[in-house]
Structures are given as structure tokens and as C-alpha cells.
Amino acid sequence: MEMILTVSKEVRAFVYKRDKGRCQECGRTELVCYDRTAEVTEDDVWPVDKVILRCERCILTERFSAEWVEEYYRDGLDEGYKQDNELAE
Image 1 (cartoon, one colour):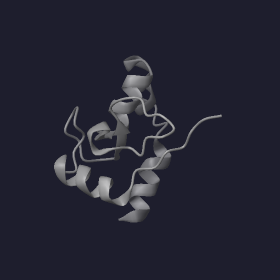
Image 2 (cartoon, rainbow, N blue to C red; image 1 turned 120 degrees about the vertical axis):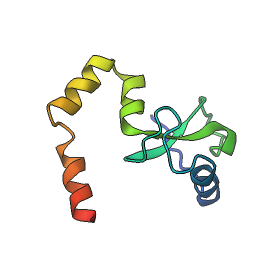
Image 3 (tube, rainbow, N blue to C red; image 1 turned 180 degrees about the vertical axis):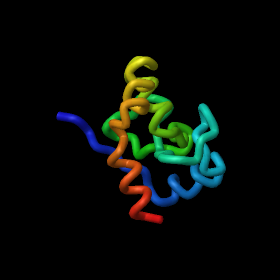
Image 4 (cartoon, rainbow, N blue to C red; image 1 turned 90 degrees about the vertical axis):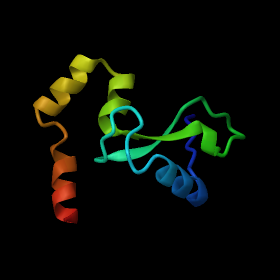
């Protein structure tokens, strides 16, 4: 069974301010989310020192091949995200 852990409001606020709302790998500000820098155990509550902001592209590149990620964006498979962002504006 996969653990679903959440980041507390306090940690999210601190990390967002600390990281200036930017992906810590590439500097993008689009589609950033909170990501772990180390494995967390069931007892962990996502402490500040294990959380950074990273964009979707950098997270996908870590988990999949760079070629797959480039194809994903080139082929427009992220169209749902683009539509969601347009609706939010």
C-alpha cells in the first residue's frame, strides 16, 4: 500500500518563501509543487529540510527518461494542464 503524506500549511508557506516560488533545479515558476529531497518514513511529517519546490518537468525528468519527457511536451500530452491554466486565468 502506498503512503500518502501531506505537507503542512506551515511547511508549505516556509518552503514557498524560502524557494521564492521557483523550481530549485531550473528556476521555472510554472507548475511548481512540493517535492521530497529524501525518502520519508511513515512517521515523518515532511520536515522543512526534506522539502523543496520543483516543477513538473524536473520531477518527470528524474522519474522518467529525458527523451520521454521531451516527447511528452512536444506531443502536447500535457494539454489538460494548459486548459486548466487557461480556465484559471
